[in-house]
Length: 364
Image 1: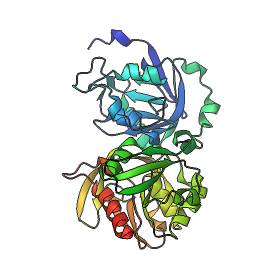
Image 2: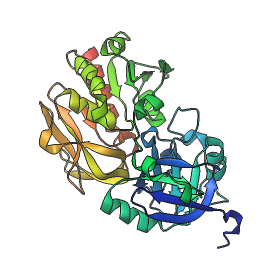
Image 3: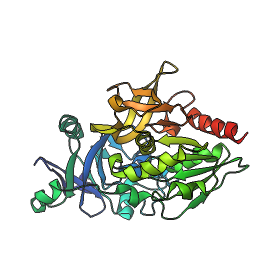
Image 4: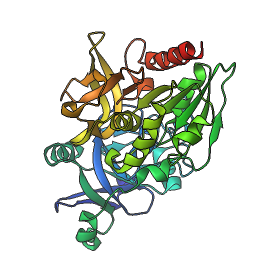
């Protein structure tokens, strides 16, 4: 293939001193972030706009990315800057996408979003490195000699949730609404809102720093704790507020980071995974005795040896046995994976159906 249309050199410099040389696409910019890999074969637009990737440089293990183009209808983030990732690394990107929903190229989208891309490196070798050493800090740069290695090693994602949460309540009404849901936003995805709207739920997204009293003042039928980025241990204060919800009769459902915060609110602990789960992952449904192919994006998990009180595991990861879901005695429940993006004959949208049925029973 003739790659002369993008021959400008760009480099990935890792904190361990390794350097990968490739070619530039996207924005003319440098970026520093945590380098992680995602295994999904499709859905790259959803990946680069997922708020859970805040502060991270994403490596796609699938070799060809961008052939279906970009469509804003598939954006997962409400953040105005478009793409959320700090940088994006692929083996090969498609310059001329062909799909009936295509409204632009990945290259142009990254230019508009200020996100640098790197292509043409051995992504398999990089993925194997991340699997063996864990997620590493890295810099995307056109000048590898100019990278401050000490600053790179000191990079920290920090308070990522504050950068992706809404700052004021936002309304997402449903047609023929029957229930009111407060979506506590730690980095919510648009697909979560759509899943609730389709089930007759008016959604009010509220900022991460709200108190339980403020959330309850909305008089919702249920509270959904959203997914989001970062280390859950940083947000013990939010978990303490979530705990106050559990003293009421309100329905509570946690996804992703919300799953972890609900566990912390019940006395559970979390742990950092070596390289996380991102992209397609197999999960065992312990109740139904089946295996699901789920979509995930997280670097931390609820520790199986420190499960919260009054909880039992409902889902576990089929590869490493980590906790993927919890059911609580009070009726609240949670899932580590994205329930709206499970690849089974009926999806795993039944978790949203379960949430709605709890609201229905308690309203009655």
